[in-house]
Structures are given as C-alpha cells and as structure tokens.
Image (tube, helix red, strand yellow):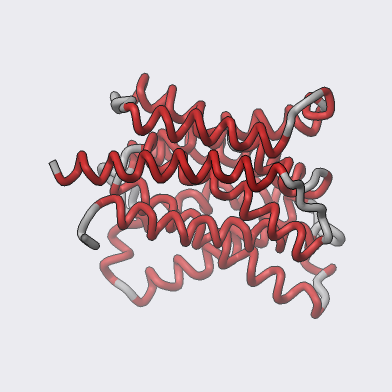
Length: 290
C-alpha cells in the first residue's frame, strides 16, 4: 500500500502544507520590523548557506549544481519571485484566510496550463477535486466587492504566477534533481530580494526575531523541497488540488496565533475541499492499481 504514488503525494504534501503555514506565521511576526524583500532575502540566504554547505561535504551534490535548461530555471524563478513578493505583501495586510483563499485559484490555472503544456489528462476525479476545492474556497471567502480591492488583485496575480511555476517545476522534475531546482531557485531569487531590501537591513535584527527567522528559513526551504518531490509522484493536476487544504488549515492558524475569527462557513467549505480531494485520491489509487 505504501508503495502507491498516491501515498507519497499525500506524504510530501503534508510536509509542504505544514511548512507553508509555519512560513505564514513567521512572515506575520517579522513584518513588524522587516519589509517583504528583506524577509525573502533572509529566507534565500538561509537556504543558500544550507544547500551550498551540503554540497561542500557531499561530492554527489556538487555535480548537481550545474543545471540543465538554465533558461527554464530563470523563467521559473523570475515568475515565482514576482508571485512570492505579491503573496508576502498580502500576508502583511490581509487576513490569512483571505490571502490563502484568493491564492487558491492557482489549482484552476494549473489544471488548464498542465493540460495545454504538459499533456496531462483531466479525469473525472481531477475535475471534481479542482471544482469542489474552488467551491469550498469561495464558500469560506464569500467574495464580494471587498475581494476586488487592489490587495485582492495582487493575490490573484500571484496565484497565476504560482500556477506557471508549478507547471515549469513539474517539467523540470523529469530531468533535474530537487537539489538542483532548489539551489537555482535561491541563486536567482536571492539577489533580486537583496536588491529590494533596505541598506544593512540585518542590523535591525533583535533576539526575538531569531525563532521566526528560523521558522521562515526552514519552512521556506522545506515547503519547496516537499512540493517538488510531490510532483515526482504525480501529475500537477493531482498535486495542486491538495493545496486547497491550506485554506482551512491557515484559518485555524490565524485564529490560534493572531485572534482572527473562525467563520461557521469554514466547516462547510472545508467539507467541499476535503470531499473532492478524497474522491480524486481514491480514483487515482484505483487507476494506479489498474
């Protein structure tokens, strides 16, 4: 049973969801002192120190520092940089549940792009997972005029950027290791973040920033490590709908850590999200067994 690709997709996505939530909490805490560029610069710096340190002691990893299709890495990371910056800014000014809800138009964009550019099949289970997940998010968010504010449009643009990133990442996993993808992600995005950061911004560091910075660094690296590995075991149209679970999860995190209110419709929306995901995972398990 544990050899099923579905098992590994769920396993890696559980790690990704946990890591993304930890990053969101860290961003909210650090935003009182640091700008979005500065927080992302810290995250990239942490990742590069760790990854290049591993390459120094592991000869096999040093061989993976040379990428294939460098142009695709550049496109992926410039697009992802723009999306991450928009998401980080939104987290500092909007309720966490709203940010995640608007962001979760990304699986819809991903499904369309994956069919067009990766040749993936849209089975009934995948359609149910995407559509029910989107309905669940809309129930939780109840979008109206408020959702059309500039801040909301920033998140929608970030969602499209994440969808493009997901499709390119899935394509790269066919020929690149996760280590290579992560190294070049931070090599390209790191300098972009440092360019936007304030002069000598690290001098603003205080002892109470240490734990959130560690959470941001570990969470940021672990989330992309887990997400990239999930793409190795399944199509983008299978992996991305699992990300819908971040909406109810982050609503609980916002309530627990920042006193944000829990809407009764959160339960109803969550049932739609979870129901669609379980339906698709069962269909994918049967397809893999067949």
